[in-house]
Length: 286
Image (cartoon, rainbow, N blue to C red; front, side, top):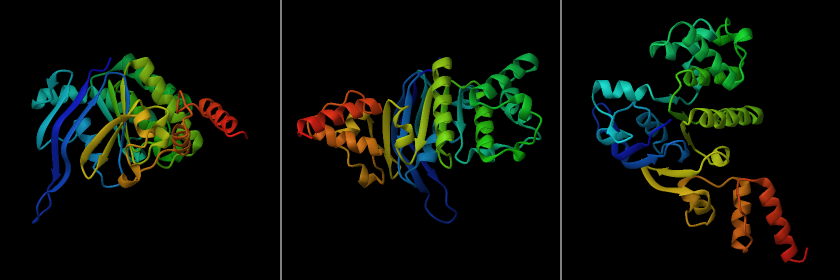
């Protein structure tokens, strides 16, 4: 079961030779609650990938703290322990593949964490089942011979095989077709439910994370502006267009309905939206 992951006043800058450092995160405060799906959304250049790598312990803050539970992540032993519990799926995750076979690639992470023998085999098999890959059919093949979608699933399986308590995904929906996106959503939801894991989805747009996430952290220019739930985003109080983002199409529709006094109980459920639309038309005498 995941613990609370927190960033407290985190600053991070990239060094530039012969120039001042380029700030990527400025005073970031964020909490990921145990077992929740949190979406971190921002436009390109907002600091999303940097935030993802800080959350996963791959980048260390220049100042501020990362805490897991009540314990600050510090020192070599503390960082090693933290990295065993939090895993990151990079943007263009297929670039993470490198081994001779699919099975070896998926086994690499858990093997480095000490799994051997039957435990290692079971971790690989379980991860393949989660992402919908056949280990019998594909395990002995080169990962570079897979289709684009299969490569993405193999990369995700390699992360899930490490059994992380917190899973961080950087732009996981880019380049996926509708079937691929739906499969990824179901995989994340299933993993969260079975493992009790927390999931952090880092993205430049809201639509694919809308049905999964409970809360949305809005990032702009390296600063975390607000953490909102769906109802806050739909209320219109946050001007998303100024942040280079917009609501999903059905979210825009819900906002219009709410503005007309029509209640929508669950803004991620198309049936609720359809019912609200029927009430709207009835109120207008259509």
